[in-house]
Length: 135
Length: 285
Image (cartoon, rainbow over all chains, first blue to last red; front, side):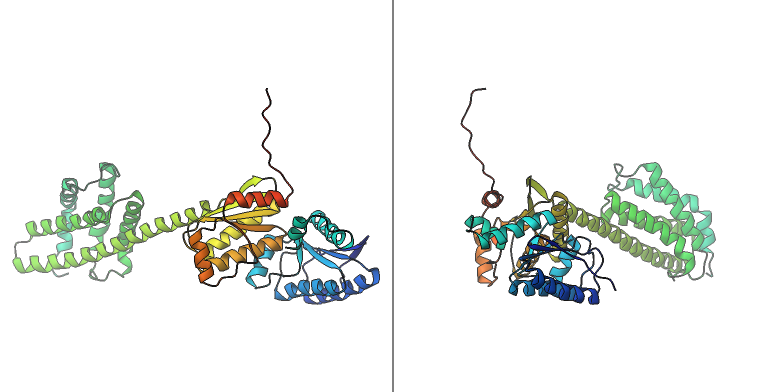
C-alpha cells in the first residue's frame, strides 16, 4: 500500500503529494496527518500539490477536512502549488476551499506559515500585513 | 430528354461561354480589383463544361443525384472563394444568373418551335435556380466561417495579461464577459501567475459595459480561482453605474477587494507587497 510521507520541519509538517491521489490514499493521508499533528504538536501543515493534475469533489473535500481538523488542533494549513487547471476545476465544482490558506510555492507557503505562527505567538506585527495573510 | 437540348448545348458550349463572358463583362458590378479576367474566364469555362456534361442526364431536376456532385463542388468552391475575397452577395448572384441568361439566349436562337422552346427553357431555368440557391447557401456559409474566425481572433487578443510590476499582474477586460470568455481570462491569468510567480492580480473591469448577476458570478469565480493558486485578486475600475446595479441586484462582493481605479488598486498592491513609490528630490546631474 502506498503511503504519502509526512515530513517534520521544526514546528511544521510538510506533505508533498507526488502521485495522483486516489480515494483510499487520501483517506489514509487524512488519518495519518491528524495523528502526526497531535504527536508532534505541529503548529502548521504545508501541503504541496504541485504534482497533482486531477482532482474531484472528494479530493476537494478531503483537503478542506484536513484544514478544518488541523485548525481545531491549533495548526494552520497552507496548500501550495495548485495547478491552474486544478484551481479552475475546484471552482467549477463549487469548492472554493474557504478556510484553507494558499500560496504559490513551498517557499512562500513557509513564509506565510512562519508569519502566521509568528503573529499569534508574538506581538502582532503590522495591521495590513495581517489582513493580507488571512484574506 | 425527348428533345436533344443537351446535344445542342454541348455543341454551343463555346457560344455560351462567349455570351456568358460578355454578360459578365458588361455588368457594372464586375470586380476587376478582386478577380482578373483570365481567372474569371477559367472559372466560367470549368463550370460550363461540367454543367453541360451533366445536362445529358435524365434526372436533370434531381440535384441530389450523384452525377451533379462535380457541378455543385465547383460552384461551392467558387462561392466560398468569393465569400473570402469579399464579393457582395449581389455580385456572386450575378455570376450564376448571367449564365442562365446566356443559356436561355442560346436556346432561343436554336429552337424554332415555341412549345419545345418553352419546355426546355423552363427546365433549364429550374436547374439554374436550384444551382443559384446552392451558390447562395455556400456563399453564406463561407461568410459565416469568416465571422467565426474573427470572433476567435477577438477572443484571443482581447485578454492580455500585463505585468505591471514584479509580482503584480494586471488584466484589463474590454467588452462583455460571457462564460467562454471568462474561461479564457481565467486560464490566461492563472497560467501567467504560475509563470511569473506573481502574488497579486488586478482585474480591471472599466471596459466592461454592464455587470449583471452572471458577469458578477464569473468575476467571483475568477477571484476564487486566483485565491486557490495562492495569489490575491483585486477588482478595479468599478464605475458608479456598475456599483449601483451590483447593489440593486443584491450581489455580494464584500469578500472581494474592490477598488475604484487601476491606480488605487496598484497603490493597494504596493502596500501589500510593502513597496513604496517616492518622489525624488531633484539632484543635479
